[in-house]
Length: 299
Image (cartoon, rainbow, N blue to C red; front, side, top):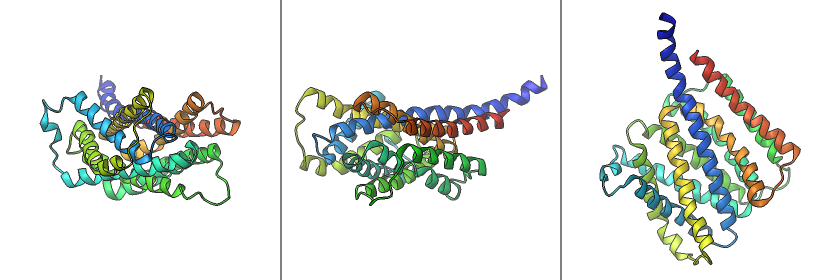
């Protein structure tokens, strides 16, 4: 009986990080679907229009899902300034990433974005008091090596659009930290809707100024799915950061490269090379190691 009583708190402590890891994995799948859709749409529509519609559909879908008209209290926040700053970080990473996707390959933009765990892990200590240990840092570095194996960055000149990916990565890192900070005081639904409203209003002038009517229902449907993929992904992202520390979740951003390989094949018929599969295996292994460590800590 004593052993069972002692084990229950440990298992409860382990359950939260494991659930957070599962949520962040699903969020990365949703973000991968968003990037793939945006890459597809960028051939026919202006980037700023896609960004605006991504947030407009985000607000509409989230508003209907949570029935905001019945629960206006969802939009209340104890930290309005941080909410607005977080929303602009989300807008910044979206604009920069969508611009980069127009000119770069999915693997290139993803590889640069995967520098974010270094920034998140480094800043989570001083900002959130969540210090990463040596083993977690090693797992992050190994995961990043796996990304380099997949993308095999060249030694030639850096494309100017890559700077937008760097900007997207930095905005995303601060967005992640602010998300973790705000989950202590504000509700998940409110955080999702507020960020969408702020971004949609801020992007309205730019989005309308370049508006081009989508040519068919298929394109309209894809535009609407950007809000579903983006909003859904960020809702899962918020839930994950509500129950698990940022340094625990950061390595599992690397799972996105696996989703990118799958979607690249399904949508663009990109067949992964041997190095791509090897790199993906390294990425998955680094994440599984963190998962193993979390389970061991709870035993």
